[in-house]
Image: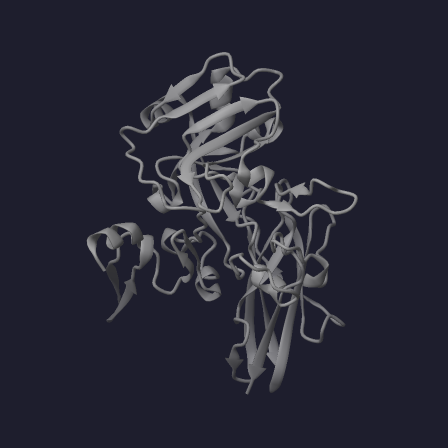
Length: 383
């Protein structure tokens, strides 16, 4: 690979640590990610961690945090970068990273970000979803983000009463957009002014890496990851929602006869997945630990997770962790004693509003493969 190719793929390195008399070696691949990441595409770079790695910690290490990109990763110099806050505001702002850090109170939050296409691979079993990335259950990850509250910045700018939406723009340009254009989406005013929405400059105790939005990104807990814009350069208060490609055309459920415009995706539905064992695993007979996650979405928590080994006739309750904070996933686990032969494990969840999950992926299939929140199933062979 030539020097240009190396620069595009990001650093590759080997790190190690000594544990007792053993040395654990981790090889770092594209953009500083672990070599065992499931890479769906190199340019744009899209990758998810394998389930067993994702299941290990409540906060996902940055080197295995999933990566969803629509075009080449911009390289922005933090010293030259500026954030422009404009539109329907009394005092337009141009802020450096130092301005953000010094003028506004910093806060931290543990947040799970989830791709709108998470678990799309399960939908492709129902019918093909051509042209879309076949994400498994690792199209989400959890990190500790640090930054300023967007509400504080908008208050300083004097957001106008008539501003009903807040748009976020970044310089990355996707070849899939028609016509090609900088990435832009928006959220309603009430969501933008909520205290949990951050302009984040740090992730897991370190500055944001380039592939995760350096020097600044938006973090909108409980909404699809496409609204947590990376490489943020503009925040614009406006009357109408963004008319950019990734909101007006992409990230929408398709039109139907009684809904000619389709549905713009925003708040996440309740979701649940099995992380270990992986689908198709061959296991020895006897007790096996089954682990996974559940995520309730904006303003809700997961109330219960259950698993079944007989196709859903009988269910047992799994142990469920409390969330690390509003907008964070909840991990769950249970131990099953599986007899020899083929086995199938189903999972389902309920949230704090009493909502459950649809039983079959066929009930939520759509041509873009978005928002799969049907019961997950893993098929196992026990010997």
